[in-house]
Length: 445
Image (cartoon, rainbow, N blue to C red; front, side):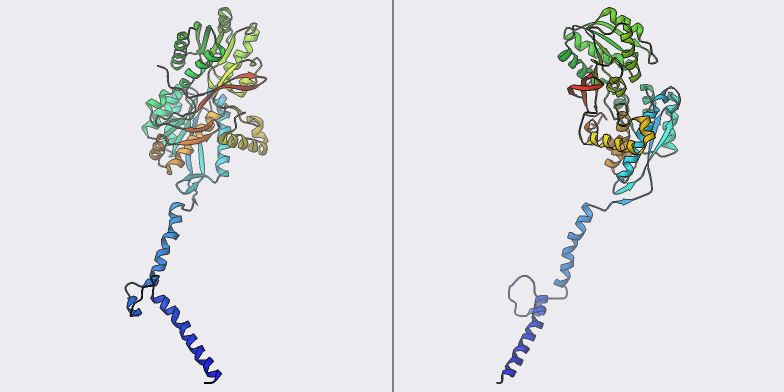
């Protein structure tokens, strides 16, 4: 046979093999077991080729099921901000306004409020309660029944205001994230969320600090004349007297009091080792101003036990040096929530000079209750994955709601109270030196 003929036969055999191998591969499977008739192993009913796409479907759909894509919507998440923009309470309305403007900016920067897998804009609607209980009821009712707000926040400056808003919110099963000091609001109204520390939470920490650090033999108490503050002071007095500390003065003033000279004169006369006072930011400033006019504190130690005592306006006020204060946040604190709040504030202030002139270049503790109240509602909506008010309320009271707050990571329990800590420090040159940190304490019966 010629060489040409041999190559022709070789090429023919090679061509047959090339054509035959794909056919055999398509007809067979991964099992190498021999079969006498290959055609019989590929019945029409099984169609092995068709199983390849079917086998790959789970791999394609699984990521979509576990990490669904996030979409956007123009439908806003409405939150009702109930506060006094008129009447005597309007003096503090700048705190609410500053918070609303900053949080609106923060939410826009992050793309909105995440409801399920939909990013939606935030609409914070202001309702003026006009500094009275009737106004609080009307404002809260309008927010829920007319504007369909998913939750309410803020409230007035008194416990009565907070109770009025709580009652309306409970009636419609809508979440109310508040900064009222009385923890019993959360017990009586199960749709509430206490965004800050309750005043009752201060009883044990402040008393423990006094006994452990200040070691007084005599003490005087000054507080607003309310049932809650009377209860708090009774609790502290009980603990301190059990430790051998004598109470030489326990006096209460009206919430409108600005002249503390008569009370401070009594303090000077009794000359206790320690004075524990509950007051508003403005009243602390008045006390600090008026005591030097009466000759100063002398050897008397002065401790502010309410959270406002740690406010910038107090610790930078004349006469504040040496004062002991209670707070749940300080500018020196660094954690994810605090860093985010402070940096957001600084950046916004730099871009909005008029806003900064009114509210400051950095935040203060006076703003924090409003900030945490508003984020309390937003976090509850996102945790619920729904804008249904009942679902949001349930999520808020699930015992699993958390928030990276400026005070640290907060977890709310099923009673709507949080695990925030209490800081106690001493004021020196307009700054607070933190001396002790306490976990929120149980109520003292």
